[in-house]
Length: 193
Image 1: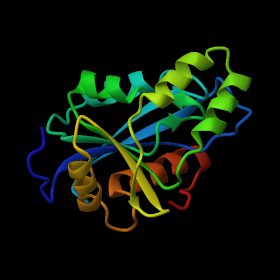
Image 2: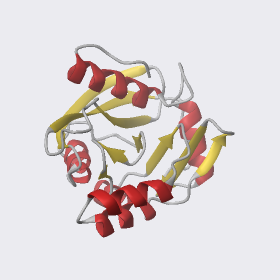
Image 3: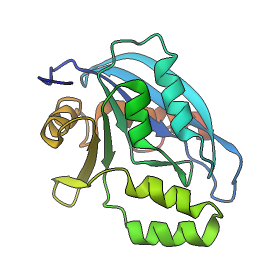
Image 4: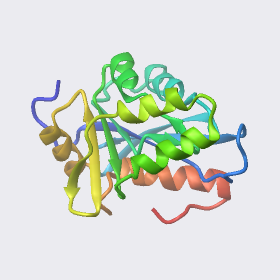
């Protein structure tokens, strides 16, 4: 439990690399950047996940639990869908790592459209829709610009963590860097955050 959000809170932020939508079954990199607050990069972990698979949750849990970084306090996710519709089970990440999870997104997702796409393109759409719906309430942090979900941490504390760990953009620095690194691995150079 986080009583006070310190300036140098240890977080790990995950994002995936760019991929082609017609590449179902191929692999894409998942990068986790470990930081102290918004300034010091402490380490990086990577895993490969399947485009439109269901292995991102296991990859995140393994990356955290098998890493040498044992002083982590919070998991930051840039959304809950990775590598297409490889959807994170945020409750399971919280339970199996013991770390609160904060999901950060810039655009409010259209859950109805996502569910429709899942029904149309996936035989296991019921499992994926259940994961989408179980991610927690979406809260607006910056009107029209930044939203978040919190699992295992209060929404007030989660907002503090987001603010303390952000420096060069609205998004926490660990997520911004994870995005840049993952894009560079997949495309040869980083993409705009």
